[in-house]
Image 1 (cartoon, rainbow, N blue to C red):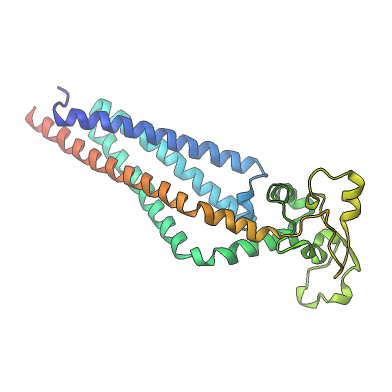
Image 2 (cartoon, one colour; image 1 turned 90 degrees about the vertical axis):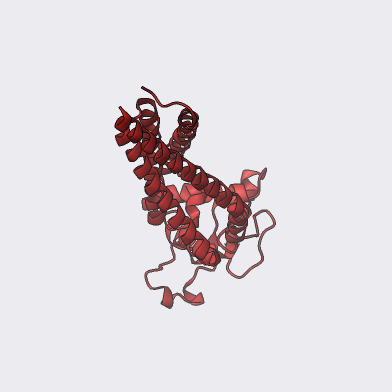
Length: 268
């Protein structure tokens, strides 16, 4: 004998919520896999390569858990199974706690965002760009410079001390002005759009401490990247809060249905 009355309404609401969870989880899984395989995501420049990869694997795991929880929830409601409803409750509770912990950490360290992003972008310019072992970071940074119309971390001058110009950075303390090349090159992605090839090629060859060519982007990428993150900060928190509230509602519904199923079994 199935549940009826108010419990029947709760069952339909649970199905709708779990369909939403399934879509959210699937979206997270697809996005995570896309970001893991596509090196052109500008978000990867906000932290070191290893930290970015680890964060994506955690993001992927959360997506899989949400999708799995949605399956348990739908099956538990349709079969009126306490075991499946408890499994749904446990999985969603784990995800919700993880989201709250991540949100609390991000909010607490919001003031350190500038330093984290600046350090990651500078490391990409100075250490990683143009290196054969970090080809994906080179592609990502070229995409970043083209889309944001910027050059270097704080400006084109950053490339003068980069491994891209064969500067030995094994002992950064010993790098002096006298040890730098008089002339240095910047990546082609620093050139402004719609330039002729020869204009861009000439503009990429700069003199250390000399004036910058008007054919290249003058502003660094750090400030523009931080500006984009700050503009979307409120939206990210609003979406996260909405998902957490939805999860809290689904936990309440699952607990109610568990109690209703148990009482029905006792009456039977």
